[in-house]
Image (cartoon, rainbow, N blue to C red; front, side):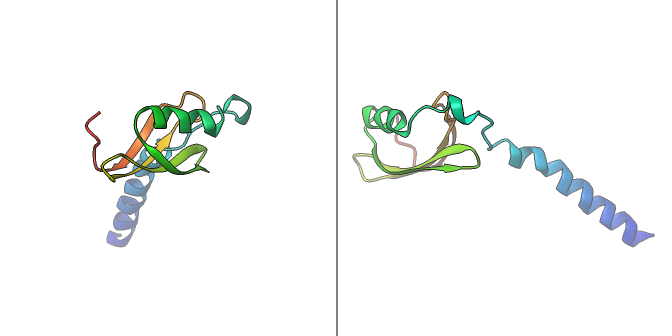
Amino acid sequence: MVRNLVWAAILSVCLGAAPVAAGERCNVPLADWQPREALQKKLADEGWTVLSIRSDDGCYKVKATNPRGERLEAKYDPGSLELIRRKGKDDDD
């Protein structure tokens, strides 16, 4: 009985976390994606040097550096080119 309660608790925690993980996925039809060059230009205009842009979970995943050498890892919506998630030091913009 206790074992069943423990498994039920574990299952509810895992299922409760699923929407959070899914929140970082982009659901933009491929026909609506803007070209990578548009995102690269946007970031260059903000002072970033783009090292790579690739597709990840339906989003654009970017690795870049700013003029101070700080690294950026971020995910962008491929349709709107809006920032979804960012890792790394803040660049004070």
